[in-house]
Length: 408
Image (cartoon, rainbow, N blue to C red; front, side, top):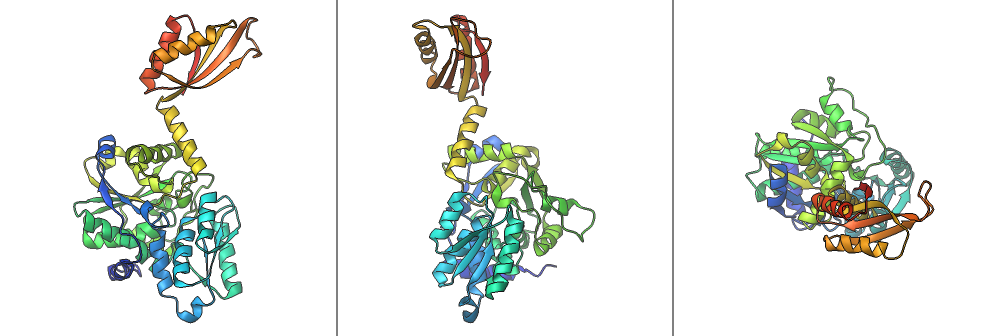
């Protein structure tokens, strides 16, 4: 049995009751209809630092004695652990230094600094940042605060599951994003104690499947490495899970499923459009699992942990535009038209009369292969859906303006 017991998580829950937000666990009729499961969302993106990470960070800091607090704390983080630790260290009067990978989104860096922490950007990934943070802690005789592989961190994160099952006792499945494993380890211990028959399912992005590989490997002795690379879900982009978390996951987690980048993007966009809430890539992984693995969850009462909402606005903007394109609500038509007065106005009239909204026009007379006295027109149009986009193209064709390409 692991070194973390349900009593540890209960103690953390009691201590954190007035320190962190008891976030809503709300049903979603629309997401339930889309996925075929009965969906409740635990909105940890509504924490003060927009992530569950401050639960474990605060519980860890509470245990540091006064003489050690005076020497400060050091941590490594892709962003959310950094913000949670920085915020609660500031509340407790502890100096904090956070080492973050150089590619960490600007919003996570700036918010960490706003909470009073010193940020050191180092390394291409979490592994390199982690090694640097450990070295700094030794140099300064400061306390190193693990991001996930620690009993108190795990106990703090497990308070999410206690709240979920108090708020929605009918849940029979928890779907939890997995990076280093602290959240799923703590939640699995709590959930299985409260309801031994509950299913606990982890979710990893395809480029970082290390915990899934570890769970499904034939040997229980080794930890697995992830593939690596860029991902929208940088909050769970951990190449190697923790020793303690891997032990717990192997012992009591039912399964870990893999989702791809596009599905996570779709999930981020769905949260914005349907639930009117901003969710980062890692936070959308649970919904992505329901979209990618629907039959596995059909008809079940699924609690989805929306683990964080710290997404760079530029990334969010790109995700929304790409989602509009995928669903046919932004379409780019390419036409070859006569180069004479009034033709562009005629095309615009057809599109507008068909209910399309022109948002961008490019007019090219000098494209290779375009005949003299003709021009290439590329028009970006906002439409209701893909069927509406097709009807506009058909109307243009009927009126003599041949659409040579329609891209979504």
